[in-house]
Image (cartoon, rainbow, N blue to C red; front, side, top):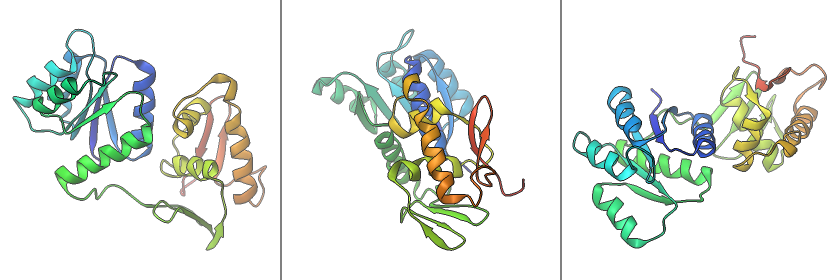
Amino acid sequence: MSRKILIADDEQQLLDTVRAYLDSAGFEVVVARNGREALFTFRHEQPDLIILDVMMPEMDGWEAARLIRRESDIPILFLTARVDDVDKITGLEIGADEYITKPFSPRVLVAQVRAVLRRVYGELSTEPSIWRVGDLQLNGETHTVTLNGERVDLTPSEFDLLAILIARPGRVFTRMELLEQLQGEAFAAYERTIDVHVKNLRAKLEANPREPRYVETVYGIGYRMRPDNE
């Protein structure tokens, strides 16, 4: 069973970015846009971990955490733009497991989420390290890719792009989603750089790049990894 993560933040771009990273890492994600919504979602969705922004409308993250702590010892990670030690101490006294200062790397956040889950629940049995589609295999631990048993050398960006796609066969990603997950941010002017990475990937993986077996174009939307059963 995949671990469920609740993210509560009133910044839509940050919410979308963190959600995309956690989704690609194999977590089930639910979101809230203020403290009251976070409290409601916590009670109804029963997540395994909560990421709470401190400054939110209607109810701030601290108050939401205080109310949640009355009902559960679920792990909580605070997000904040504040850097004062007093604020960090306040968050930890409420019962936070981690305190993350903005701006932050989404990849580091995912690593912290995994570390907290591992510490609280033990091993993450749902966290795969090897993905396969047909004769294509990606190993996240050794950072290697093989095709028909032969190693394929990829650039870091090509490897990360392939990892995003192969972890969710059949799932269609827009160019902006892929760009956000690769770089932590997305700008429309750079959206077509994804096309370049896909072209280079196909040149290394496909027998005929014009008729791809693995990385498919979904016209008008983006790209996906073709599942085994298609």
